[in-house]
Image (cartoon, rainbow, N blue to C red; front, side):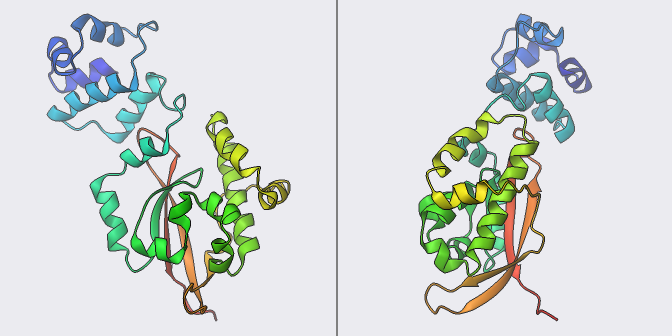
Length: 244
């Protein structure tokens, strides 16, 4: 596949190797699918960067190259790894959603980036850095979420669903070990439900200053990340439509 991408851009093996700071013989081994010469993520990124200079590699081909290199699900990305994949355009979209709360999360519920409205709406969530940690370790979550029990169940069932679809259970072990310290989490986890979305988007919130209640429709979307497929979510809270 690497040779096909290179030939399509009329780039010689020597030129590709030089631009990626590799030896031509190493690139030749990769193109011959030498199983003893598996590239690191840094090498694949360097090769793609050189190919992109001539013509952008499509998302499908980019992901396939990572798959062939065995890098799709083997690595366990940190929050910083995932945060680094958010482009300036993705971050700008958070600002455009103001005054509606919006954020990028990983599927373990860590907050990768958010707008100011998100931090105001879910008071204390930025101090915790994680939706799950906020719900089960921060009493402010019970003030912000009028239906705290329901939201806690929905969040845990969503996480169970993501774990069930994941090929790398180890990526979750640290998070689950931490959360197991909280009795409410253990109680809800023992219920055993797994979900893949909210049955209804409506969420009831309590204003931290006035105590007034308001409703938002919380929408959740999977972000198609090339490097870390099925690891990043986009969430936005829109004004709830009046109930009939």
